[in-house]
Amino acid sequence: MIQYNTIKARLYPTPEQAELFEKTFGCCRYLWNRMLADQQRFYEETGAHFIPTPAKYKTSSPFLAEVDNQALIQEHNQLSRAFRAFFKHPESFGYPNFKRKKDDRDSFTACNHEFASGPTIYTTSDGIRMTKAGIVKAKFPRRPQGWWKLKRITVSKTRTGKYFCSILYEAAVKQPEAVTPRAETTVGLKYSLAHFYVDDSGHLADPPRWLKQSQAKLAKLQQRLARMEPGSQNYAEAVQKYRLIHEHIANQRRDFLHKESRRIANAWDAVCLRADALDEMAKMLTQDPSAVRESGYRMFRELLRYKLERQGKALILVDRYTPTTRTCSACGQVQPEIPYPRRSWRCPRCGTSHDREVNAAVNIKRCGLAQFAGQSA
Ligand SMILES: [Zn+2]
Image (cartoon, rainbow, N blue to C red; front, top):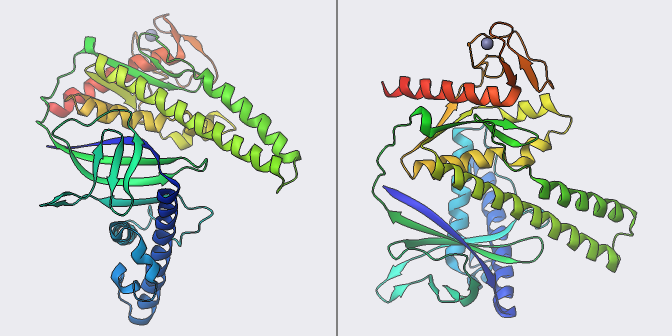
């Protein structure tokens, strides 16, 4: 089984290397737009889909030769992939767009090639060797295992002006043995706007207070920006500060989601969730649909999935139309409804008092286990 791992390193390019990166970002965008324009023209004239290769543009645009050819080839591959996705699923993938500097992410990708003389891309103790740029100083949050193979890198620049490099490694691993979940080793989680999630024994995830604090800061800064004169030195500084806080919030959130999913994936043999349609739920529960999106629940679910899978464990998604909230987890009777925002209720049949979310988590776990048993039977 092939497993992919990514390590994201912060880069500290010299001014010359930074200039080369900027040039590469620009060339990639330029090439993308040229290829897309030619594809469109070609399609109008002949009715056939065709994307010229980067080599075609080098004579008329000699500056393309100044940057890593690999990055240009990757741009061609990405455009081809974008078209393939569009042709196959036009309902979910839009027609590829032209890239504009002002709203495009600054990035380029390059693949590693193994030659007899050695690989084109490799890491050193405090740097990454790239084609054209040479060794770029880097700080690694962790190191790859000895058997991992470096496949490709993506260099990017954040809006706050920091450079990063995502290094993709390939590793052949043994397929983990499938773990059969039992009731004692399975947890049910109910998504909760207030607590992120509630589990079936009533444990709450840490409410992301840091997020609220940072968001309050962000709102204040936004007001200040609204009163300032665009174009002034102060304005530029405030914008930079705004971006830094934004970046900080994104980092905090990612960190929280990684740690929380790691903790759960290690502690339990299986996790049951409801396959909620998060966008619909957001509309229903709150005036502010960004509340659900921003909480990162979707990312949390995907992190959980792969962290469990790597240990042979299952993420079990319970059908979203299962009445997990309205069913009494003690006697099984289904109520017509438990109006939101009632937090607790008593079952009229057996008299058990329920916390709305804990009761739902218990039902999610029970349904999930039954579903899993049904699938493997
Ligand atoms: Zn009951």
